[in-house]
Image 1 (cartoon, each protein chain N blue to C red):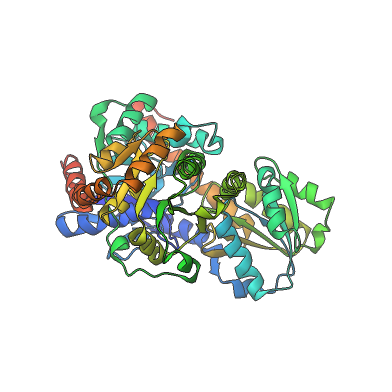
Image 2: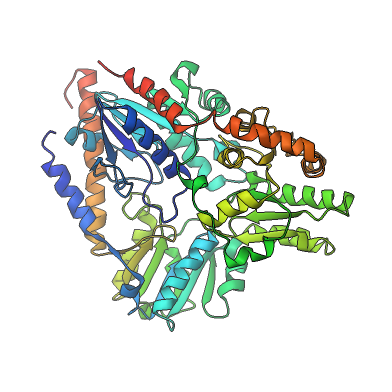
Length: 360
Length: 183
């Protein structure tokens, strides 16, 4: 079969969706010698020996593929992210991967993307033959909020981008001060659903109850949200030096932070999968994470759970992990075993089974 | 593969209107309008790249109203920051003309997910309007990464419209077959 893959454009720092594409394609191309793969659009920057078919994308609505497929017929189009439209009478299987429905579920936070999820992605999901969800929880959301039949939605978990967490680490000059510090690490992108404010409030509550603890909280990521966090920290001047905002760090610096940290914390309100949790588990760290949405699927019994909506619950979880060395070491022992349950090798095998259902 | 000539030719026309460039190639601009993004780190990298090659450039930074203060704090001592609410339309040029001499603008830059896409029609409308006022170079940055210059905005927009129309026509044709009648 000829299979067209739609993913994202080139990025200077490979993140998110592109990591998923690279991970899946790396393993798919090893195990699948029968099918021929093509990239749709400008994904020729990815280091694969795959032909590209030019397309005109539309970042705001579904990508129009009638003209493309009329000129370049394919047996399957699989979009790892962007919704697409193909007339039902064009003989081609349609697969759409959905990572989460966050803007649909939180329009108060993501109103600019709500319409995109409510129209373009909804329409493409309805037109698709198969939808790939990256977790059972995302599947549940797709079935419930898009009214899609369960049989049409298949779960293929994310894994870890191959080299990231085994790369050489480096401690940039900005991180020098952390060399001799004990800290818990939180890594997350922009978005109110990431609950960085709740995390900081919980950490400050922990510090107020454990005044002899020298632990710090290190937050990496974009700067903008930090003004809100700075405002919170300024109200607690006696502990403000215990919250460290690194801003953007390189991949190598991030690996150093993961390895150096005492534990990892991720108390997002909502995730479609939760890759940072998996990353931390893969380097054998004790992880504190939310007991909501997809995170229990990733964490299994290898993490310390808390309710992200309750500051006390998050604070107690920090206390359990930081203050109880024996418990922390138990989590560390389970961490890598749990992480090994997720791999792009397994995901690629599952995906290939899905592709085979389209064989004539 | 089937006959791909006509498709490839249309794609080449569209693709030919957009060229990858470097910050050095932007250094001749003296007075630019830049539409900002909320991803501050990436926007900062763009401004740094621009000013490294062109330290004396004059910039008017347009920001969504909820980000206006943040950008004014960061850039307000060097550049003009103008707030705007909602979708960017050609009305922004009308607003700016109250504060700056639009005819002195020689560059317009915006951020986009993709260098070629159907979505940024609003920015293309602004670009065409600016082009009508004088010699203005049009640039985009893919969220702080690659840089592109748009040459021949009119041809670019017409070709994109043609692409959309062909897709719709194929829909009509194939649906006609479904209905068993003639269009």
